[in-house]
Length: 154
Image (cartoon, rainbow, N blue to C red):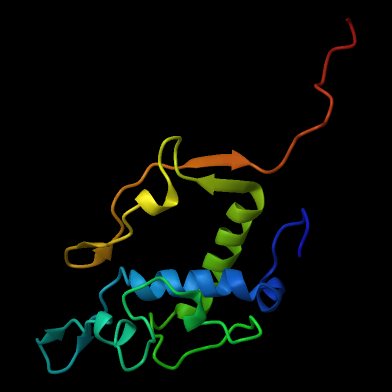
């Protein structure tokens, strides 16, 4: 859709699938606990998982499913139950630009001998949810066909 030029914030409306991948990834792996002061000296950490994986809000709450953020025509749909953080607008735009740039420049796949079905995407639990380590291959999509510079003597 955007060719080889650098992705722009305006491209987001034309890339609903990419936007849905980012949102669904954030929904399943909310990695940042949020703290709010209720009473002086009392710190509360709300569990966003209780909203982001609520079966009454999401059709398949524990499964990576892009239809959570895409309508029948493939357009991106904002969901009220999706909450991340106060600075989410700026953070989501930066994440979109970064993610789109990576996908534009590289094809990602499991290493030889590993299939996508072999990957365990279950998050690890701690104070936050975080992904388990994986190895992957990143193959450049950009073929550099510029001539190799030389000094003119050969």
